[in-house]
Amino acid sequence: MTYKIVHYINQFFAGIGGEEKADFRPESREGAVGPGIAFKAVFGKEAEIVGTVICGDGYFAENMDEASEKVLKMIAAFNPDAVIAGPAFNAGRYGTACGAVSDAVGKKLGIPVVTGMYPENPGVDMYSKDIYIIKTSDSARGIKDAVPAMAKFIMKALKGGSVGSPAEDGYIERGIRVNCFHEKIGAVRAVDMLIKKLNGEEFTTEYPMPVFDRVPPAEPIKDMKNALIALVTSGGIVPKGNPDRIEASSASKYGTYSIAGVKSADEVAYATAHGGYDPTYANSDPNRVLPVDVLREMESSGEFKKLYDYFFSTVGNGTSVASAKKFGAEIGARLKKDGVDAVILTST
Amino acid sequence: MVKAIEATGIPVVHICTIVPISQTVGANRIVPAVAIPYPLGDPSKTPEEEKVIRRAILEKALQALKTPIKEQTVFN
Image 1 (cartoon, rainbow over the protein chains, first blue to last red):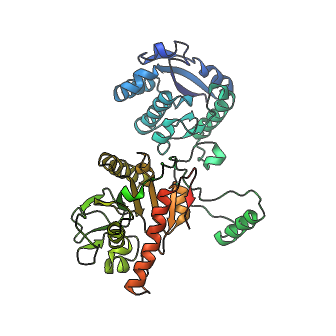
Image 2: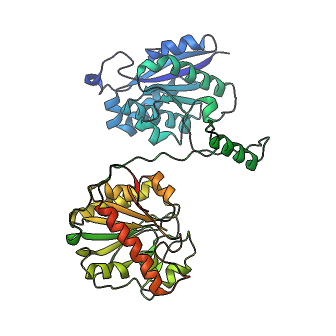
Image 3: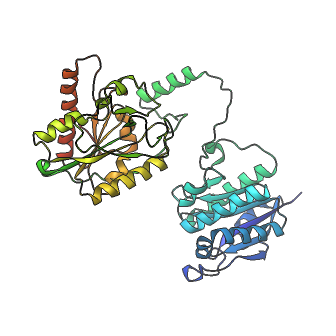
């Protein structure tokens, strides 16, 4: 049988226009348009592009809910077996649109769908957990590789094949773990990897670490004797009783607490809310995590001018990067406003 | 948090035990601590000795904040 496929593309790939036509509203056309013709060539008789739905990137980005709904209706009208969106390469709004369309197709129509993007496309951050995004190059020059890869993926899905690992099937990791039996036990594989590492040979980790963005180092303090220093901790030290009810793990908030006039973070007034380490030592002397006592001594002896009147605390235990980022941004903005010169952040 | 605060232009020194995590996440000024449950102390010592340990780490932290750096630096 010949499978029926609908293709979603933007105004640029449809040949309607560039940025000046980005407000182009969703439109449905019969058959293949633009890159759809390349897909058609790869599919041969196995599948047919029965229709193409086109939407301007600007229009989609500014009216995401409405545009998604309209595009989805137009796609559904073709009664397709599967959907292809893009590829969007590194075009941010196009990637977002392809992600939103693919996500809606998967969730609402329940048919196979695939898109393609460059890994740094913002659409990847937004949708890679929900949909299959084939890894492409950053520009349309990569279309000759992207089209066969996307076509192969969608044909496999249509024929009922199970999805392989990201490396096997060329899509961007979705963060899904699949249990499987391996011919070698973990210990053997770990030692094999270690030996390769020691020999300077290439090896593939079974647990890739997330990639974190970087911030350039801030300028150092030139005049420490006149510096206002703030204390922040992810070690969960809070006033006893945890007034803000900061969670012991996966914290959704941080607390802001006055230490004006406080000489020491003693065990009478403070304790930890952290659920990720043995709290015995922090609770018997919270200065071990929040070193107010020694900082006060250093303040008195003039090593720096003043300890900022508040400390900020959260629990760094399974806390999402997004939450931590948000806490940091809010704390940073407040410290900046209050003229704080430097921050000491302690972690357990 | 370290990075988001530093993004405002305020230098941050991260006092932490698991230095590789701090490096992976991207702290720029890192001072190693004693242990996870007591980064700035040591319950096997007397309170006075603990304060000496704590002071040494904090002195290092202030030193780190005074030091111009171009890349991630661990202040041992």
